[in-house]
Length: 255
Image (cartoon, rainbow, N blue to C red; front, side, top):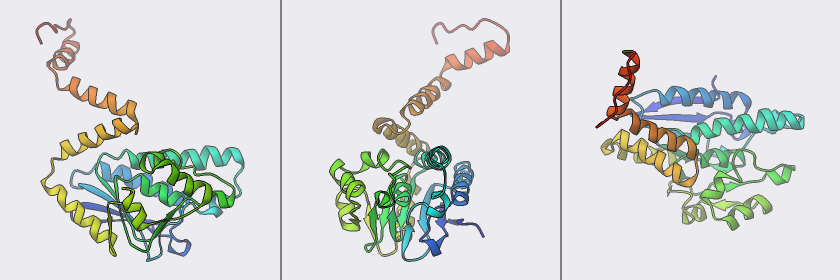
């Protein structure tokens, strides 16, 4: 059975982490499945949004499975586990469609970093957020000190990363990290997706890209993508392409 299940609820794709015996801790297989699902979902025009949630009532995701990385050599840990996970998390963070993290339970370490990759988050009232890596002698490796620094105030992030203190749902919402608190975060997330019915898909994608450019989320690619789209819509592009195909010199004057 897949450890990350894909279901469809209306025009939303729902990815559910299924490793409940280990509080939905992330494994190598789960990371690979996540990457594959993201590629498939992004190419589908019938899907308007992506929701990420966890199985069971206890945890959204308690982080990375220590059994998967605990015995890795330092260079393996950095190259394959941290760098590889970073690439996949960046893929989610830069996803073109709107994304919602439905935090059905606690989000610790890599689980919190996964939630941070979503555009917005909905959280059950009894859940907490934490960065407990220092308790096992490591540091956040999947953007916990980088992306989270854009989403939480510096003192709060230090409180979590240095002292391993937890954030309650209420405090997370007051800080703007969580959009809503709900006993059924998946249902709440699906309700938010319904708002997309009256939203232009193209405007939605462009607005997300522009915001990412403003906050430093893959700024270089965002600038070049927007510039390329503008150039591709111009008469110069039409003339240049056809001149190349016709094996003649292009004429851009007055265009």
